[in-house]
Length: 447
Ligand SMILES: Cc1cc2nc3c(=O)[nH]c(=O)nc-3n(C[C@H](O)[C@H](O)[C@H](O)COP(=O)(O)OP(=O)(O)OC[C@H]3O[C@@H](n4cnc5c(N)ncnc54)[C@H](O)[C@@H]3O)c2cc1C
Image 1 (cartoon, rainbow, N blue to C red):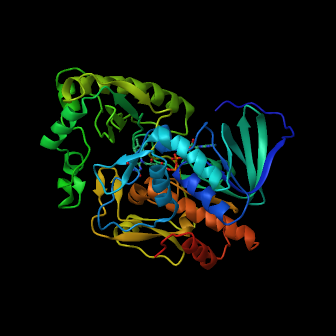
Image 2: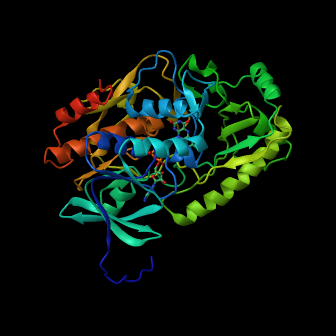
Image 3: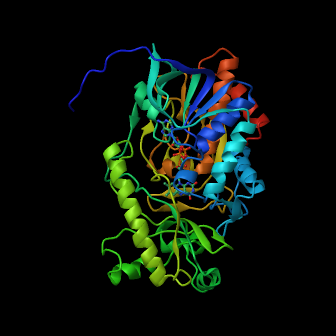
């Protein structure tokens, strides 16, 4: 690649803090809230003008669509996000689960309040673009914003960017699948003008099932209800209403009494490396094009949608997979399918897998423990990585990428960062027993 030399310059220090969390998705929100609850100064840095991450940017409202009667969960901040949004008036009943669907736009407002009430210092419209490393220890990050190029210094940084940006900038090793193997990306959207009664009647008569979209599911679970648009796009392809090779397929989320169907997740853009700005540009343009094609197909073939029109569209493409760090430990398929236990557990997650066609719904009460080691990158200390980019293989990613699991790793990282600072240790050397005690005090089930 052609390069130029950038002149060395002194950077103003924008802020100093104990814990800096980069990225305001489910992992980052949980990390920042957990750290602040341990009474350390905490900044939550976010590149956009709102937080919530993929939930708000890509309208992924299905926080707990997997939850069934017997599902065992960690509780903690993940559960609080759902409860806070509900008390805020920003959730709907979830037709697939015993939980709630979060209204993506309302969650932008709820999340602001929650973060401020938690004592976290939010910093929006600020992009972390580099890492300040000194002798293997992270000292802070370089930022770019309307205020220019600056630095934020921190005792511990939590990388909750989803893409392991800070780990990569700091030189920590990571892996990433090739474009052909990465999961596709999606532009979420919602429509208004739906005849809700007609739509409800149609899905009662012809309910979608998990077996309609996954052949790799657990026996018995293929019959479970799924908010899946059956036949619409297949018919539209057959009739030439959308291109024959259109990848459109997928799900609806909430139905509102105002005649809206929200969080529609049917766009599929393939071959996108979300750490490449040209790919991101292509994905946004192709994603929005597919949204319009999807609405046309829904108007023609989905009863109730005849007069539907675009009401809201994700402010950014939604990424399912990019960098995964190499951690002190590595979560595996064996772990997530066999109720793994770890000495350094920081929380649990139900046996819920959803990616690459594999679907396991946690109907059984089985769950696995999540080890601290998957958040500790090799080579760089005082950096923790939480959320979908924690260390693990492909199948374990189908669990750790789930928003509730991201909240578990986020909360674990937040408490660990605070404990390290308060006990004079680095994040790699923190006393895990002390972290576990504090996590339990914060209401997290760790075993
Ligand atoms: C279409 C789609 C459907 C999905 N469906 C489900 C589902 O039904 N249930 C489920 O649980 N999960 C689902 N997922 C997965 C889930 O949404 C994500 O894996 C999860 O949100 C990841 O959380 P996170 O906090 O790690 O990262 P994110 O939610 O991606 O948040 C990362 C945050 O960091 C910010 N950021 C990134 N880089 C920087 C930087 N350099 N500087 C500053 N800020 C930065 C981003 O703007 C963002 O706010 C879906 C994902 C997609 C795309």
